[in-house]
Image 1 (cartoon, rainbow, N blue to C red):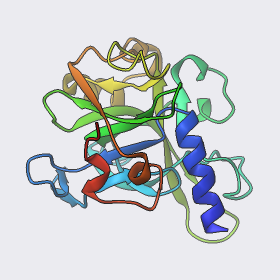
Image 2 (spheres, rainbow, N blue to C red):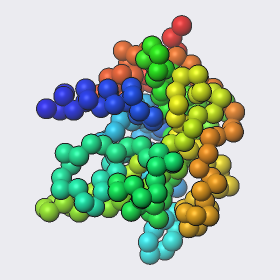
Image 3 (cartoon, helix red, strand yellow):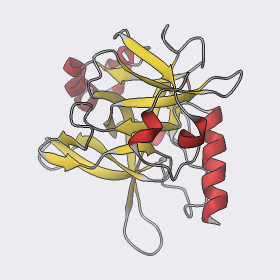
Image 4 (cartoon, one colour):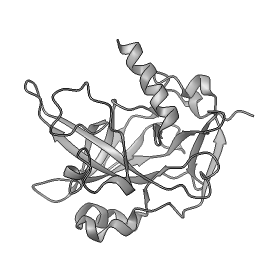
Length: 229
């Protein structure tokens, strides 16, 4: 059953944006440091796995780091057999029964880069900032309570139209926030932050990676980032 799920997730990753991403420190080639916490490196974050997000603490209104399931679980879900809603289209948020109820529960998703598969030949690419610095994408989160057991925190990454770096390989990209816009995204009402939901203008780069490494969700090593001709 697990193998079937991973295979399905791999297929979804080839079709939708953004289906896999990376979080690590490019200088040390190891884990990243976020809000004073050491985050293990993950070179192939896949839907339904846990990953770090940053949200506002409901009591202190301060930023806090949280490990959450990638793939938002809406309150109406009966169990975790629902599809992994890991992407939320910016142009399809309003009124959406999965994402709209969580629009005021916004978060940021740190990453070093993400993978995208060309729509014509399914060749995977690794996309990152030219500076190779960690960046932050816009997200929403939810706390879902099953009938039994502990509550599950989950999130989705918001996507928009591609910038010029991605336009030739895919029609979507994650919303990348400028550092100075993070506080605004987390704090202000959604109708005041909609202008932030747009393609990134930051200089970006891409290169081809090995599909034998990246396409398999269980592969999690720096080999996933190795460029191929």
